[in-house]
Image (tube, rainbow, N blue to C red):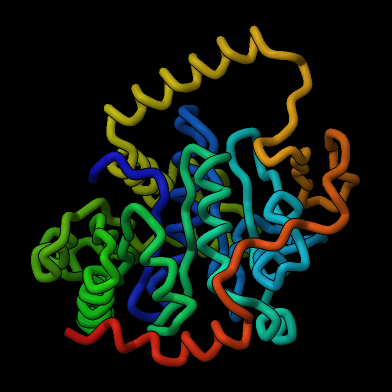
Length: 314
């Protein structure tokens, strides 16, 4: 893959383990120790990424940000030193209030703050799943090794290309060695780079029940090893060197800077803990968040989104 830092994790159909891949890849990259990672639940109507970390958000979510009821910084939940979650909400009323077009502003803010950003997209073809394809550096496609999933992934790859984005490669999930179509054959059929394959592993199901990514709950399991290899494939050595150099530069600048610095927009940023404890913060951010810029009203955007499939046509 090229030296990209903002990825969409997409799948043609539900049930292929897209969110499992997004959660574990985010953890695996963060464990490389080369920079900060944000993982975002963009499945606005059926959000469940937080459950993979055994948590229920106690404060604002991405839905609140897209409804202009919270700032991006207020919806960030720190999972570890180098891993942050921006969860979604599954309540229908919160979904109705969202304006997906503001996602462009959200991703731009995350790109400035984190070294890597992973967007866990919803399944199928809708305005909410297609729009993010236009604002990422590359798309990681997830498929199961069965023919129905492969066919759906082929359609998704075509949509990615029409959106002007780059199919960064495919991950073959739930592979059964000796039984399923070999991952290399799946990638060849899709004409995509094979980033990695994750074997079917009981440890993955056990990890979900325990509310912890398998990369952490069963680090020696075949699935965890596969996610570690996947992180190495997604993050090339040249990018590792670049990030390490940037970190060294930041550390040097920090030594020469004042001890307390405001965020780039003049406000102070806040990171909340998922366990519900009172968040540690610098001077509080403004009570009324700055609304993301928009080119029209929410009603106008709703009208525009109704014909979004038109740009998919040749």
